[in-house]
Amino acid sequence: MVDTSGLKVVNTPADWAPESWRNYPGLQMPTYRDETRLQRALAELRGLPPLVTSWEILSLREELAQAAEGKRFLLQGGDCAETFADCTSPTIANRLKVLLQMSLALVHGLRLPVVRVGRFAGQYAKPRSADMETRDGVSLPSYRGDLVNAPEFTAEAREPAPERMIQGHARSAMTMNFVRALIDGGFADLHHPEYWDL
Image (cartoon, rainbow, N blue to C red; front, side, top):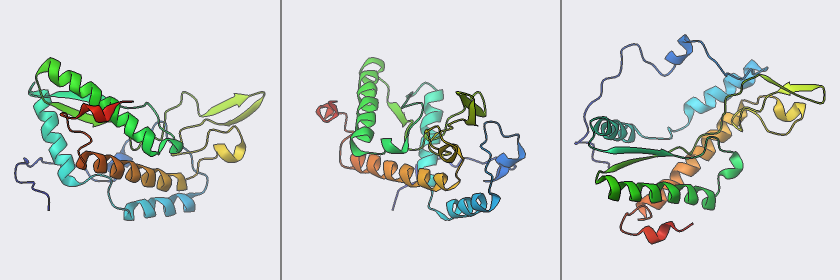
């Protein structure tokens, strides 16, 4: 059981709901040709466990509020975009090591607690300036990240596939699980930076 007694209650705006984002224009959205496949993938996603818990969200909100008040420093780090192939123990551990090394320097320099936010475990989609990419007179949908389609320049690879969202959720969950296990095992202990050699 997780102790949430020290967390403040944060009120959610009355007009917010998990689907409220659909009330706004969507930019950079992939076009899925098969609505049935898309709805099946979305239904499966809705049934999967969340990647983060409500108490983790509340804890982060509290720490971000403290950072806004100057009581903590926010450090966010990670790659601009991840691939499914990046979901490996060494890659994940190395990303965490870099974040920990940076936070150690900041803690000593600033004399403030550091809120570490890893920008990994789900950076599988990427915006594009154009919906189509043309090579040698052939136009195909732009590669929008592994969450949407594949990078190979073929019609099959570039077709947005809604099942990739399920794969992205699975890899995000694996990454989060591995990071939590490392942290729970003492990997992130600031008293043991020797664990963080690259």
